[in-house]
Length: 316
Length: 93
Image (tube, rainbow over all chains, first blue to last red; front, side, top):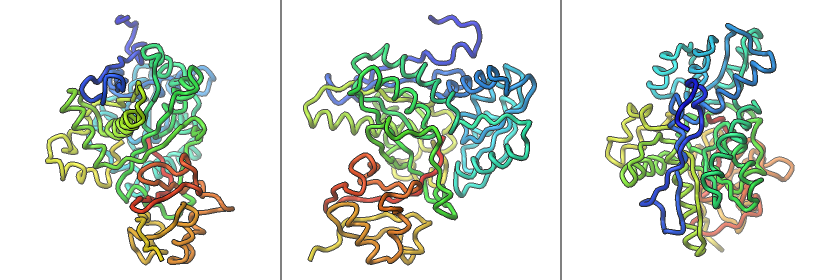
């Protein structure tokens, strides 16, 4: 169905697109779940809409209220869109080492941004947001890292959509941030077929992002349940950028940088299937398109310097 | 008799233990013995990685980019040429 009553109701229902050239063999196929086709251009529209609807339903979010959220960008942009259409104010706490486009988009949709220090990355944004939430109890704290509505959006949306389009799925590969996508869609897919492998690709940033003062300041999202995952990979900027460019070059798909990390893990699964002489249908998430990352220069710089441009940036 | 040949990347927060070295070498047939060897070279490091005989909650260790918790944990087998990365768990998203 291509007709929707409003922008919000068009969230989800994204296409699953085959990659005939990047797939390693006719029986080992890669499928891209195009989450950039959501209204604000990222998978986060699903969680943002779900969290706001849940807060409205349970009475914690009242007309005209102010929403607070720590975000490296996409969740904030999605919340800002829903907040605008539903008449809420939004305050985002965002690390200062994020791309300029994310700031511009947040401001365009009417969000107020409070910057947190680059050192410590999203950890710092979470810490600052928690402090603000404690000081301002009238603000409604969405908290994507611990909000079950985030996981549920993928359990009820992303997972069933993929399974309906690809009942022969053998691997599901997605990024690990809040862990909502993997926990929700992963759990649903596992329930349909216990043999489906749920693979996490986690971005590995430059050093400043891991610049904690103390190891006890480390962070594991409350939503995370390791038992949902089969395997978990850490993918650095160099591999991510290489795969983003490959996806563009070979299949014509213009994706954001975190998708490169996910594709890297998906291709590793494909190579293993080939090695083991097995068939595979590998679905992976395209989290967003590349528009927001043009200013980083990774699409136009020469290959060697491209990933250096991301050093110490929160690129996923 | 063996020469240390497994490369271990140390995060900033733990470099006070390694005299600021970013990459160190160690030996071990599995992760547990590798950590013992690291601790022998850099006393105190094991205690920052382990708690009650298990990996600390906020420490992630990757063997050739794969999270060791999914490939045997401290019993994960290692071989010459493997690359180990130690990182604190941080928020994404």
